[in-house]
Image 1 (cartoon, rainbow, N blue to C red):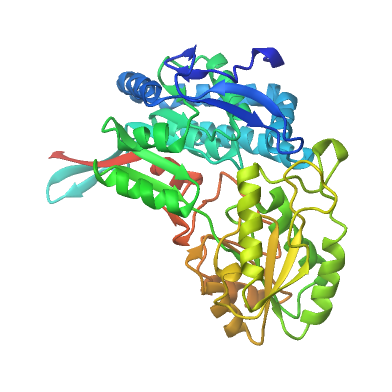
Image 2 (tube, one colour):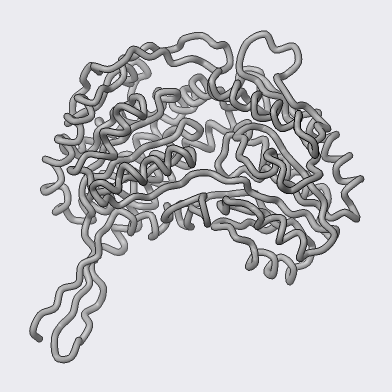
Length: 483
């Protein structure tokens, strides 16, 4: 176990060493108290260059290690996270303002992800499919590590999203450079400390927190980097695609959504209300897959919205130390972005705030936005169409199953969806017709590394988790030879 003071959270991790950053000075701010909890010097373009060179130099040897050897390292990382679980939970609460239960789920997800990929490559060590007879020749299809992978992680799920990228990249035999968000670097750098203690060869894993337009751009544009995996906003994702085009780089993107939850008249109303609440107010709505669009059958709408409103008004918002059910938004910048989005939307016709709509009343410090419910009267309204990334639920009614599906699919996004109904046939039918990559039926969004993650349309390019996540860090090679 690593003592709390042994976590290196104010330096960069490059080529197996902790080094001082040479970029801008950055204050990490607690979103609960608005106090500076860590001052660090971010990475510069030169620091990122060093990290890429380290990963590039380490690639040849690491890529030739056996899957069993790599699995041992992944298990060590999982064990290190388990041994330091309490400290990591505390860092998630301090840096992100997450309630204890949410922070604990985050840490457990990291452990599960590293363990899963360790087990996957240990059980299926072969990198090739069975031989194929091709007109008298022997054909073989192999999978090989793609090269140096640049991993750009978001601030809403530090460590978690990083593990979704890092574990399969290492399992595939890639070396990596991780760019954590400058807003939530504490748990990420603690993870780097755990990886350092796991004893991976120098250069295999590098962590360079820094500003996106400086170190992120360097990572995407550098010809030594063969793969970029990014999770974040659509605007930045599109910019990354353009930058990566210069070197025809392999890119995976997970860019968010405006996911629907459909509640039919035959649903268990109590269950439906809890699914709606969890779907939008978990992590203060700062989830790419948040079910922020509620579609409810018009036959039950009046009673459902009244009961939902009663439920939302009792959600406690506050600091983790107060056993709050919902924490703050991550930063002042993001808080203001959500405020501006809601105020602008409510000033337009076709939207009526039923609950909330702004900062938590009486809060003198911290970035607390009140749980909000808004009725939408026009499906073209920007609050219905644009991702807000905060605890803001918009709702409309529908008259038929066909209308519900049409409204659900009327979006440029297609990441997730939830169907709540008492009819098994309807559940299957509607799920098949929804344009979304992750659909739950009468269930919360339980994301397992054994499944897949990603969506349709502008939500994603590629898939993470499961075997799909491993494949995204591999090249496919066919070899033909005489029999």
